[in-house]
Structures are given as C-alpha cells and as structure tokens.
Amino acid sequence: MKIVHIITRLILGGAQENTLITCKLLAERGHEVTLITGPALGPEGQLFDQTRGQKYRTIVVDEMRRAIEPVKDAISYRKIKRLLCEIQPDIVHTHSAKAGIVGRFAASSLKGRWAPNRPAIVHGIHGLSFHRYQNPWINRFYIAIERATGRRTDYFISVADAMTEQNRAAGIGVDKPHVTAYSAIDEKNFLTPIPERERAAFRRKHDIPGNAVVLVTIARLFMLKGHDYIIESAKELAKRFDNVIWLFVGDGKLADTYKQQIRDLGLEDRFRFTGLMPPDQIPLTIQSSEILVHCSLREGLARTLPQAMLCARPAISFDVDGAREVVNPNTGRLVEPKNVLQLIEACAELIQDRALRERLGAAAQESVKTKFAPDTMVDVIEGVYRSLVRDGV
Image (tube, rainbow, N blue to C red; front, side):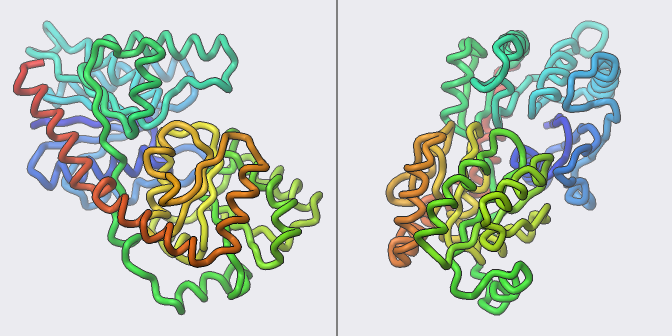
C-alpha cells in the first residue's frame, strides 16, 4: 500500500516516537511510506535524526506549526494537498491536532480532477485537543473542529480505550469505527538490565547518593504536567524520609518557576534537574531510579508509564485518561488527580518497602511486554489499513 503519515512536528514526545516506529515497521514490511511533518520548533528537542537512513521518505512542510496561524495554515494545507496529489496514497494517517485538521481536510478534498479516488483517512488519537482545563470558548471551538474533521475520517486509532470513550462522548466520530493500538515502545533497551557500574555512574553525574530512593518524573516542565503537586508532596515526604531524591527529567518554560518553588521550600538538596535527555538515555535514567511518579492532569496514555514498567519499576500516577489501563494495584498505585495527601501516602508506601517495589515492578514488566511491543501495535494498524482498502473506502 501507499501510505502517508502526517504529524505536526517531530519533537521529543510519545506521539512522535509512536509515529516513527509505525513508519519504520510499515516500510520494512514492504509498504511505500511517506512521512510529512512541520519543523521541530520548541524547547522539547527533536527526533529528525531518527528518520535518517530509513526506508520511508520524510518531507518537511515549513509552514505547518502547532499554533493557530491562518496564513501559514492555508499554505500548509495547499502544500499537503499538492503532495497528496503527487503521491496518490491509499491511506492518509494523521496525528496530533494541527496535522489532524489540515491533513484530513486536504485528504478529503482529493476527488474529481485532483485524484481518481479519495484515500482512506485514518486519525491517530494520542491525546485530545480539548480538555476540561481550557477556556470554555476554546474548548467548544476545538470540539467543533474535531467534529468536522471526524466526519471526514474513516477510522480512528486510539492509544487508549479512554481516548475512544472521550472522543465519542464529545460527539466526535460517533458513527465511525475506533480501535485501540497501544503506543509502541522500542522495548529492547528497557527490558535489558543496565550494569550496576553504569547506573552508579549516572547517579554520581547527578549527585545522587548510592543509598537514595529516587522518585523520577519524565515530562515537559509545563502546565498541567503536575510537577507542582510533586513538589507539594515533597514538603511532607522529605521530613519522613531523609534518603529520598526527586529527579525531574525534561525541560520547558516552567523550569525556573519550579526551581524557585523548591528553593523557597528549602529543598534544593533533594531535587535534581537533568534537562532534556535523548530517548536512548531514558532506560538508564529509569533503571537508575526506584519509582516513577507521574502527575499529569491530561494524557492519552503517558508513554513514561509503560517505559518504567518495562524496566521493572512501579509507577505512581494520577488516575487520568488511559493510566488505569496499565497502572493497577498489582503494578503500582493510582492517585486521585490533584490529591496531594493520597500522593504522599502512595509514595511513602513504596519508599519504605523495597520488597513491595520489587514485587510490583516484576508484575508491571510482565503486564506490558506484549501489549506495548512494536509489532503488536503495527499489526493492529496494518489490519485497519487492509480493511479500508479491501472495502474500497
């Protein structure tokens, strides 16, 4: 099949890693794959290096941006439509809000003189563009746009069952098929135990004592990612446990704000900030820690949860969106969103009980090995494509 994937930007992120794995495996299975993306602007880093030397083609549309910019949006629409006319794909698979809107409108316009047949249109739901924390008018605006693009979509592929439920609850694609394909992780590096000397070197690099219990958080330092709740919980936990270190992995516009909050609390010696880390260093980071703590208020299904679980580390997460599809009493702890007291008790339980951490970590690893394997995800996606082509959508 001729397949085109469209994503807004190749920054460091779960949707981007998911898309790159999908393109790579589809191309290796013999499909003709093209990836269309905008420039990787922003403080989150970039993943363009991973497209080099692959069997699929990557095309950058300079005008495609995450923010709403009507002039650039119109130009990117025309450029994408022209590219689709040249490629004549069987399938157009869009990801993320902006690429999902522009790409699906462009693909659905391919008919008549533009193309003999409109391609089948698939949209990947990695997270929803609308949420309860938005301004109500902005929320309604995004829902209206998603409903319009939903009518132009033949199939939705969600990274979690929760995304399908929320999409349909908002009146989007209610008459269209949905399927869940859990976001694949390149598992080998996470499942392979990292030697003790490398983990010790990582701790020395970040001034982490050898006997410390490390609570690691891997997320952009940005709104709604929940770092403020973790900092709030540290006020009490630091009093109870003198050997706990909090490790924040990532960067973002709130980095200085969080560092100041920590200084104001007198906890500078208990927190470490690594800044951006390349994807291939994430397994080392997790395996050099004891517990993953993730307090984001909105996610599709946070990639960092199964990553930690593959490393046999238990996860503590706010109970939002798809988190409960991987985190349960046998693999970690779910916490009511924004409930700092529950967060404190969940962390304390695992900090003080090494045997419990190891038992939860082992069960967590076993539970996600197959569910998040690349071939598992791509088998589902490829099956959707074949059904659409077979049915002549």
